[in-house]
Image (cartoon, rainbow over all chains, first blue to last red; front, side):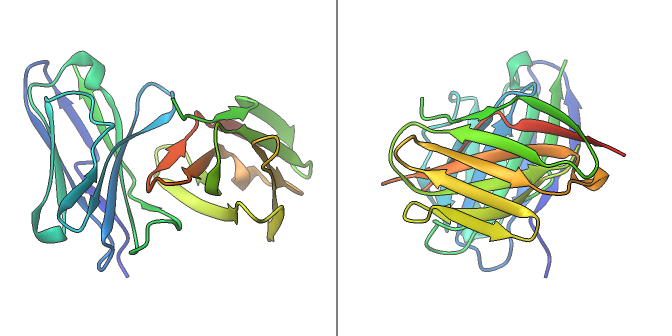
Length: 114
Length: 111
């Protein structure tokens, strides 16, 4: 069974450009989460989907970030326009219905904004 | 902020020694989980302990939970060089559906 996959693994862009990160969760997992780790700090929650619905987006930094989950399958996280402080590693995780158990993480997308 | 804290931030030991990491959190929880991250990789779930449990074992891992002190500890016994990684605790606070992670403990196990 395939795990959580994220693409790209690394993206380097200029300030002001747009980047779209993609996450494919484990098949059948209703819950999908985005997290971000900046400069060795804590892993911060961004948002949580249950199927195609945004359950909790309280961690989204500002309106430059837009997350979607088409048909309750894969998810995209778009940053537009990117700022220097957006640099970090963006992790996607999924879990089965219920949402109180373990999360399965992808390997992350490292974003560098120059 | 609900963010928990791990202690110590970094730990360096020799192979064969035990490693203990601590985690403190803020309010009542449903469960607490520990994850490992190898450099440049994703997080891997290690163990989950529920709020009504006090101790749990999995192989060389032992986790304790003290809800009165709002703290947990992860003990890795007979450490190996392959245990070198960052370790994170994550709490599922009561009434929420998201895990809250701390800043992690970087463990270095030297041969």
